[in-house]
Amino acid sequence: MKVFITDGNLRSTLAAVRSLGRVGVFVGTGNEERGMIAGASKYCREALIYPSPVLEPERFQFFLREQLTARGYTHLLPMSDVTVQLVAPLKSHLAPGITIMAEGPEALSRVQDKAAMLSLAGRVNVAVPRYTTGCDPDSLLRFADSVGFPVVIKPCRSRQYLEGAWREGSVTYAHTPEELIAKYQAACRLIPDPLVQEKIAGEGRGVFLLMWKGDVKAAFCHRRLREKPPWGGLSVLSESLPLDRALVERSAALLREVPWNGPAMVEYKFDTRDGEAKLMEVNGRFWGSLQLAIDAGIDFPAIYYRLSCGEDVPPQLEYRAGVKSRWLLGDLDSLVTRLRSSEQQQRLYYSPVSRLRACADFCHFFGKDLHYDVLSIRDLGPGWQELKQYIPLNLRLLLFPTLAGDAGGKPS
Image (cartoon, rainbow, N blue to C red):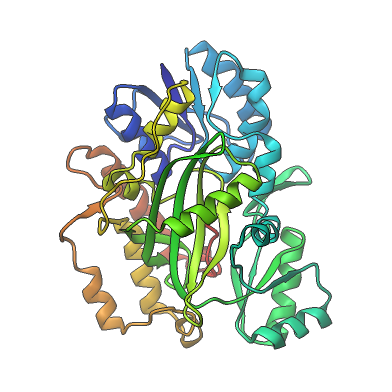
C-alpha cells in the first residue's frame, strides 16, 4: 500500500506522514515548491513537486490523475481547504484503483459553509453565537447595537474558487459603526455574504472526530492555550482534555446531519457569560494540532487509513489528558505580535497577560508531557527545514513590514 498526502508544508501533513510511516506504510507527499517540512521527514519515502493547487488547479488535478497511478499509489489524502475541494470531484476518475480519503463534493461543500453549519446546529441542540449575513448597512448597525461592539466579520468559506481564481477570507473585528460598514463591504468584495457574529469571550476548545458510516470511530477533546494571533487564530500551544462525552455526542449528531464520513474538527468557544459551548466552525479535514491527538494516544491518520482499507476498527476513545503540544516558531510569532499589539487589539484577548508575563511563559521550554509538533529528536529533518524557511521570511517582514498585512486572524 502506498499513500500520497498533499500539502507537504503543513504541520498536519507532517503529523500524518510520521503516523503512517511509523506503521510501515509507504508514504509520499507533495507541494508546489521544494523544501517542504513533511518531505524532510525520515518517514517520507517520496517528495514530489506538483503544479500549484491555487494558481493552476486543473493542472494539479491532471498531475494527480496521471502521476499517482503511474507511481503505484493506492490512497490519496488531501490536507488543506483547497486540496480537499480539488480532490473531491476526482473520486469517480481515480476509483477503484486509488482510494480517496476525503468526502464527496456535496458533503464537503456543506461542511465548509459556516453559515450552513450554524443553521444546521439548531437541529441538534448545539448552541451558536448570534450572527447575521446578507445585510444592508441599516440591518448591520441594528445587529451590532443588539450584540455590542466589537463584532466579528468572517467569510462563510475560508477558501472559495470564484471567477477563475481562489479567494481567501480572513477574520476581522469591527469596533465602531463606521469600521463595521467599511470592513463588511470589503469582505463582500472578496467572498460574498460574509458572516457577522457577536464576539464570544472564552476558551477555545476543539472536538476531533473520525466518523465512519454514522459511527464515531475516534474522538478527542483539546483546548487552546495560546494562539497566533493571540486574540484568536491558529493554535500554537494546546492541551488534551478529558473526553467531554456530551459535547462529543452533540458534535457527532451535527456531522451526521451533513452526513459526514471521515475526520473533522468541531470548534467551540466556552462563553464566559453562561459557560455554554458555542459553535465557531467545522473543519472537514485534518487539523493543525493533529500531532497533539497522536501524542496523547489517538492516532487519527492510522485509524483512518485502516478504515479506508476495509478493516473493522473498534471505537478509540481513551487517551491521556494533560498532554501539551507546542508549535515553537508559531508561538514565537504569537509572542512578537503580543509585544507589538495595540490597546485595541489587547482588548480582544480572552485571557490578557502582561508583556513580561508573556515573555516568561514563552521561555517554559520543558515540562511534563510537553511535546513539539515539528521539532523531534527522533526526526530532525522537518525542524531544520522549517527553520530554513522561517529565517528568510521573517527577515523580509522585518525589512518590509507592510508584507505582514492585517493581523486580523486566519480561519483555522
